[in-house]
Image (tube, protein in one colour):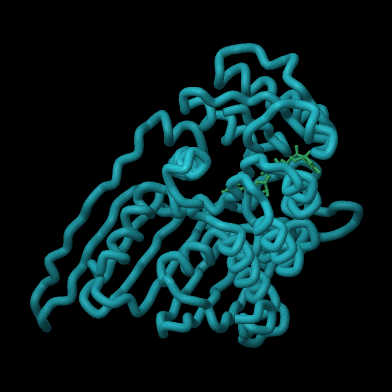
Length: 363
Ligand SMILES: NC(=O)c1ccc[n+]([C@@H]2O[C@H](COP(=O)([O-])OP(=O)(O)OC[C@H]3O[C@@H](n4cnc5c(N)ncnc54)[C@H](O)[C@@H]3O)[C@@H](O)[C@H]2O)c1
């Protein structure tokens, strides 16, 4: 498989390291307007694949790459606000596409892309990879096989470090990212929908930019991105879900923890510990028979990224879809829903009211 990488910054480095772990993968073209990012990718390719890629085909924009070099698949890891325009020429081809999350920064752009994907021949996949962290996948399988009984409540917690610096600092402003609830939290809204297996109906988010980046200035402007929030989502099947985000909690033992409670038991999983906890209900005053399990991930896979193996396992699933061995697991429609839920949360936090999903996306 010959890959082109569009956007060769931080996330592209992770894709390079993971591509190098899979036999038969090659990176044959790079697209980035920044020379320093192209050089970063070449160095990373040399290190990961063990061969010089100094003469690899490089382009400043994606239109110049299309048709100029033979590729089979493209990974888009350019800033969120570029995804829509980067995708337009690619969707005119039959190339397989893995587009980093969020699909786009607005619901309208995401819907436009989903419409175009319907007429596209290749695989189209949105990189909402948290589904593919092995402990999370195992937790989801437990929920879906009924280990908790009928699911009633789902809580997702992310307590982590502030947003990292990006090339050109694009991630400091909502206009470039879609807002934190889209940019970061599309992962969690996708997880919610996937776990609950129903449509979200309404969203209430209380969130603000309270602590991080307030002393930073970019052309005199203060970053406006939410750094902490609580978001409650009601689903069509009666399940209620919570997303608890705090981006000034880098001391936290678990970065992510997921808690699903059904009518028979409570299920939990933590990242990075990889520990799942099963706590069945018990008769009053009787201790529950708690089961703790550890979900292992190969150390070379863990070392290839910052997402607990997700990038690697997502790549394998993407390759299965390309080879016709498996389905597209994160579709353009999934991408649209995640953007819509994030946009609803942003609107809710701004206007301090519950937002019906139907206001943004007809159900
Ligand atoms: N899946 C995940 O968990 C995850 C994690 C981090 C980032 N991401 C996503 O990956 C994407 C890239 O993020 P990053 O952290 O690598 O950012 P980054 O700033 O480190 O890199 C982005 C690169 O894209 C380049 N670029 C800008 N405009 C471009 C264009 N029109 N065409 C091609 N390249 C262009 C920039 O010069 C830069 O080198 C974003 O969409 C982000 O949301 C996903």
